Amino acid sequence: MRCLGLLALSSLLVAASPAPKSPAQLFGPLYKTVQMRGLFPDSKTFADATPKRPAKAILADYAKCRCDAEPALRQFVAANFTIPTTPAAPPSAERLSLKAHIDALWPQLTRTQTSVPAGSSALTLPKRYVVPGGRFREMYYWDSYFSLLGVQRSGRQDLVEDMVVDFGSLIDRYGHIPNGTRTYYLSRSQPPVFYLIAGLSRDPRTLAARTRQLRAEHAFWMAGADTLKPGQQSRRAVRLPDGALLNRYWDDRADPRDESYREDAELANHTPSRNRGELFRDLRAAAESGWDFSSRWLADGRTLATIRTTRFAPVDLNSLMVGMEQAIAANCRTLGDIACATSYASQAAARTAAIRKHLWNGRFFADYDLDTNRANDFASAAMAFPLFAKVATPDQAKATATALRPFVGEGGLRTTLIGSGQQWDDPNGWAPLQWIAIEGLRGYGETALAEQITKAWLASVDREYQASGKLLEKYDVVERKPGGGGEYPNQDGFGWTNGVTRALMAGRP
Image (cartoon, rainbow, N blue to C red):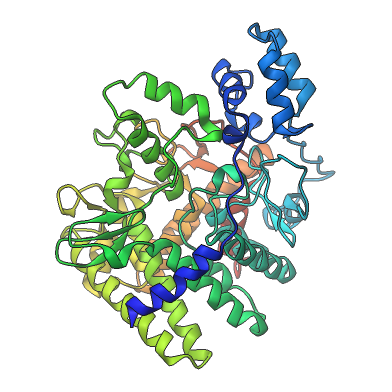
């Protein structure tokens, strides 16, 4: 039954539109030169630039251009590309309460993109959508679920329904939801939360379409699974030695990321002992995980060049896959498709058993190492995902709550206990992980710890808002100040911080 279901869905992937080329693919030598010369401090700036003429014409002129000197190169780029800018937020006439400020931010972060200029890296969307803010000028996959939690609490169900349609349209066109709505993100996805996004819809008329789209997304993550022998992997699917089927993060490209081209290329240049394609894919897979970057993925816990993301079956990803499979089963049951419901319920049950057995190290949930064939000993806030997805046993949930307590700082839940300098590490706290942990703990009766994290996070966000008038992408939850680390400065806006904070404030004075 399960095998037939996956084979039937393969046609959805085959029928998906061919992916348009990314800027690096379109502009080849010009793109590489601009990025490696560092014309823009942020590599993403040129990735988001809009060509003023067809790529073929620009490249023909570049081949004849004497652009070796930086001034000439800058002049050529300015003549042929429109460089994006980040508009400043309009000043507030008065300092609103935090809740009122968040409610007022959604219109400022709402965009439409029903058409794009030829050669642009932007992807069109049929409806309105919310962007995170700052350098993030497009819709992002897993960010959006956490943003929508607040959008809904702010009374904007209309915007929720629009974004459900937007995400469904991406699956219909490309066979999956990309990392974000840029051509350079199409080779990867992000943590699969569409089942949660779709669950926010209150329009029963779209249930059949949402279910079809969820099944197509599931087929994307499971592509190649049916041919795997024990101990083998194919793209995002992995089969463990005992036959259990799980997933990993991946990327279908193995070259520098367009949006971080110089950073990736320089890392590879300084790591001659590492296979370049393998390194680039592991960097890209970490971007698919949403945790870019973290000691969680690093062999030595410190050095980015030791990244090995594709060698794990991650606990967060597989917990979300259970949620997706359960949601599909429930939807199929409602639609009267009992064979579908039975198939996906069976897959969810098998994956739940595999998580309890293989992603549990005796003390807490952790990532399964595909090279050692066991759950590792690395502790991170990702251990809360099995609680959020309700796949933990009561004893496992209790032990996980105990393991999470050292992560709680004065400003919320830390991401890891390792201070590597990467942004998904100590001392940073991130809104999505606060929500996952709080909801997961509440679901197993660990209400005191959930409330402690809630109060700490809300106090941290409010403290910074009172000081600067901003909501940030990440926070230092140890010293209760703006977070640091990573490839770019801390951003304000900020979609998922607004959303989670607004949702946690619901029902509070």
